[in-house]
Structures are given as C-alpha cells and as structure tokens.
Amino acid sequence: MSAQIDPHVMDFAVLAAWMDEQGLPGGPIEDVRPLAGGTQNVLVRFRRGGRSYVLRRGPEHLRARTNEVLRREARVLSALDGTDVPAPRIIAACPDERVMNGAVFYLMTPVEGFNATTTLPEPHASDAPVRHAMGLSAARSLAALGAVDYEAVGLADFGKPDGFLDRQVSRWMSELESYSALDGYPGPDIPGLERVADWLEANRPHTWRPGIMHGDYHLANLMFRHDGPQVAAIVDWEMCTIGDPLVDLGWLLATWPGEDADSAAIAGPLGQAGGLPEPGELVAAYSRRPEATAGRDLDAIDWYTVLACFKLGIVLEGTHARACAGKAPRETGDLLHAITLGLFGRARRIIGA
Image 1: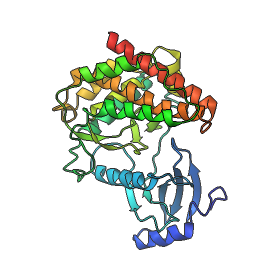
Image 2 (image 1 turned 90 degrees about the vertical axis):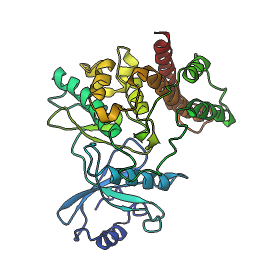
Image 3 (image 1 turned 135 degrees about the vertical axis):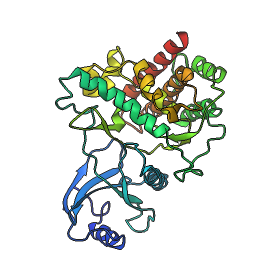
Image 4 (image 1 turned 60 degrees about the horizontal axis):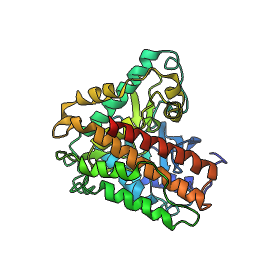
C-alpha cells in the first residue's frame, strides 16, 4: 500500500471486492504507486494476483462532468480493443459512481513507455534518425485511429457528427465570449482573432467523413517505447468524440515543434533535441493509410491546422481569463496567453501563405 494515496480517493478494500466480482485474479494488492499524468485525474499502478494494472479515476474533488468523461473514455478504449490503434486496453470498468466514493473508475493495461515532452532517454536523445522516426510514428498512430470504422466498433451513438465542422467557429467564439463574465478579465487581446475566424468560415471544407477523434492529439499525450521510435500508446482520451479526424491531424501540426524557440520549448526535451520531421512529412505519413484518408480532403490540411490553432488558443485563453480573475496562478495564465498569441500567429502565417 502507499501512504501517499488518500483512502477516500482510493479505497483498496472496496477495489479488491469489486475486482473479485469481476472475476479478476485475487490476493493482496501490492506495489502500489501513483503515476504522474497530464491531467488532474488520478492514476495508480498496482499488482494483484500476478497481474499489473493501472486504475484511472477523477481527481479527489470531482468536477461536474468528470464521471461522464471517464465513462466515455472507457467506452472508446473498449471499442478500440481489437484494432491496431496504440492505446491502453481496458481490463474492466466501473461506471457506477456509488462503488468508489462517488467516482467512476476503470482498470487498464499499463503502458511501458515514456513521455518525450518530459524526458528523453537513450537511444532517442542522441540519435536524430530515431527522433525523426518518432514523429512519423506519431502521424501513423493517428492514421490508425482515423482508419477505424466508428459504427462497426459500436460507437454510432457516441457523438453528434452532423454539422460538426459548421459549428466549430461559432462554438469557440461563444466560449471566448463567456470568459468576459469573469471579474478582472479585460477581454481577449488576440491579434488576428476576427480575421482567423472569418477565414475559417469562408474556407470550410465541403467534403469530410466522420470518425473517432482523440480531441487533444499532441506529443504530450503520447507514450513512446523505450526500445525504439514507435508510439507505445495514445493517452488522455478526455476529449474524445465522433467528429472529423483531420482535426486531430491539424492539432498535431498546430502544436508541432517548429523553428521558433517557444514551440520547441513547449515540446520539452524532444522539441529541444530537434531532428523531427517537417509538417509535410507528417501529412505524407498519415496519407499512406488509405482507410484514414478515404472521403477526407488532405488538400485542406491548412484549414484544419488553422482551426486547431484557433480552438486551442481559445481553450488556453480560458486559463488566462481565470488567472485575471484570481482563480488560477497569474504566472500560468500569462504563460498560456503567450502560447495563445503564438498559436494565432501561426494561424495568420498559414493564412498569409
């Protein structure tokens, strides 16, 4: 057991009884250790009955939608079992919040890998061709997700794909406007905001095909294998839905480390080490999966990249607004506002080109 884990957050007696009901191997729960994640959600790795597990649940103080988000994550990860998408596999899920102190949770297979935005081991650190191959693997892993027939894997009712692209700009402009309700936030000071919004509305792709979207696809949400450049798993599925998978590709490109120091720094050790593929190489790697590109217009990839800059910039501006209102650290708000300005700058460059 571990003294670091609050028993209100993780009641191991309750967990053991629930696992027994699921027919999982019995015995004492051993080798318990919390894992760092990209979100406030709780991740705990442990062993029981000779098998390793990772448990995922919401934070100690659950947010309004936390349990529903966890249910959606578990459903998507279960649906991906049997595909070649690199993702954790669900072992068992508990959608009933009454079992564990009000929290939905699930058990998944551990991922043996590392996050390249926080650490870069050998041989990756000193081998530029390995880092180049890591980037291509990121694109190919996303193509594997785009190739999945969401209806065939039981996700026909998972999202609202009708009109998905049509509502993106208005949806996120409304989100930005909502920040004005926060006392102390002076309103968005984002050069090119209206120009980018108008360009997105005027150049929206006419042809697209729905599919599973991760919703937040970038290097920080990928685990890479220790023994090679391959993606071991796509993680943090909180934003998953049914939409246009090319938005995920645009998201990868919008957040991809470039020549500017800021974007390289955001990608941590991997971005700083360099040697990564150019954006065009990522698109080419993605395009080699015909099931991912059928009915989707890769010629419009600039539009998807601009949309990703627009959407992510507005999401990050929300933390800046909360910081102005004293609801988040000011230093964090200022940092994310700077990233927002960089994303809109990237969008304007793409439009200008």
